[in-house]
Length: 75
Image (cartoon, rainbow, N blue to C red; front, side, top):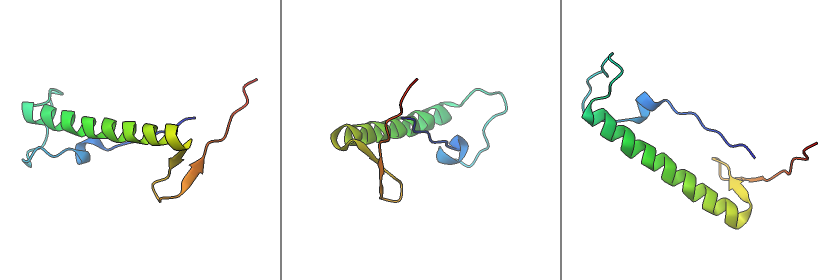
């Protein structure tokens, strides 16, 4: 089973200041901390989804409906 999501990281992060990120490619300490907290939240949500999957053998869709697990036959 494959589940994927994509994020616009720049829009997902909030450092409390409205300064644009630097063009050096190196994050400020505030940007690093905001990214760390955001990533932990994403990871925690993923772990919760996996726990629910192992209990129910299904993923809940974002709309609240369940998606069935469809076995794939490998040849």
